[in-house]
Image 1 (tube, helix red, strand yellow):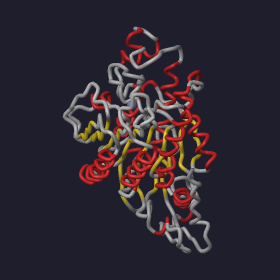
Image 2 (tube, helix red, strand yellow):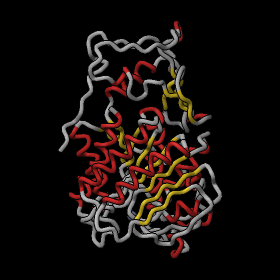
Image 3 (cartoon, rainbow, N blue to C red):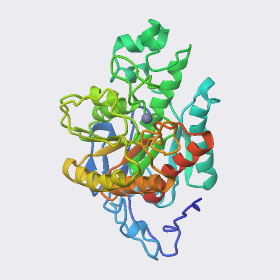
Image 4 (tube, rainbow, N blue to C red):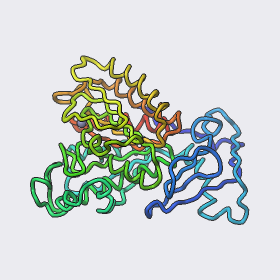
Amino acid sequence: MHPPMRPAIVDQPGATVAGGGTRAAPGRGRGMAIAGGIGRTVGGGRLAAKFPPSWLGGEIRSRTSAKITVSWPNWGMIGNHPWTAPVPRFFRKTAMKPLTLFLPDYGPLAGKDVYRRHVVVGEQAAAEGIATIANCKSAAIEDLLLLHTVEYVESLQSGLPEELATSGGTWFQGSIDIWLSVLGGLFGAIETALVDGVAGMLGGGGHHAYPEHGGALSPVNDIAIGVHYLRHHGFKRVLVLDLDAHFGNGTAASFPNDPDLFLFDFHGHASDFWHPDTPHCFRNFRGEPDARRYMKTLEKELPSVLDEFQPEVCLYAAGMDVFSGTPNPPLRLRVPDIEKRETIVFEALLCRKIPVAYVHAGGYASLGTLAELHLVTARAAYRALT
Ligand SMILES: [Zn+2]
């Protein structure tokens, strides 16, 4: 167990945050603060974000600094306007706020272990004081159509034709509402990550779903839709970091001939393997007796991909079916390996100031084991955040 890390930066005597200015963007109806003024700009349109240089590291995050000074324009009489006032709150939030995790409404599926694990992770992360749990605002049917065909979406609504409606798993009346909640949770995590640097979604990761149909336990490809969502809001270069133990065939098929989508996919089963003409890094580790080559390869290739591709934002599928205790494990990572993996990922992304929204993706061990494994991700994200 890791004790919660509680930074006490801006509460320290003498800490000051001077001036300030942000713009709150409507973000498809969701409130979203955008830091402005100085620093690096990514994205565009309503999701454009401009990070201050002290977004990570630097004086604002120093645990030993007694005095913290950040200069922002003096907005004078408009200092309390929603577009200008939240900047000091932004800094307080990055220094003090726990990780935000979005919990979908799983409806009648909430009692099943495969979904219950997400709820348990949220409860335990909140109990540890490392995360706050946010409810998901459901996405719209139109959001599904950012990726999926009209025929497939209609089948998810009506249940007909049955073969198409069940191509990604069980269909029942109202099941589409669960997938819309999951998708809305990813949108919320993306928007939060653009402000905080990192946020998570308690579930998701349907990387086997194609535009025209579902795939193994993937009725909706939330990751691919998340890419389209970012593109719709002006972000161009997106990294999909898929470390689920299975190949993300649906995601790969969704972005042929797309030079601004980099799919980084480490897996143990190259099922339905297909190489689109897309920047990609696929590694099949099937048959590896231990995690050494996986770790060495990840440590070597992830930083070089980040430096060469220079993504504006990352969507991370933090699959836990890499665990050696998984039935018929595609990979054989142990808990210390997974802890190291998560640390490598978040540190590599956040030291380069690349916002990351993560999803749980696969996991097939017992409920208690899976909850502990997903908590490893939440703790590593929290450490990177603070
Ligand atoms: Zn998987």
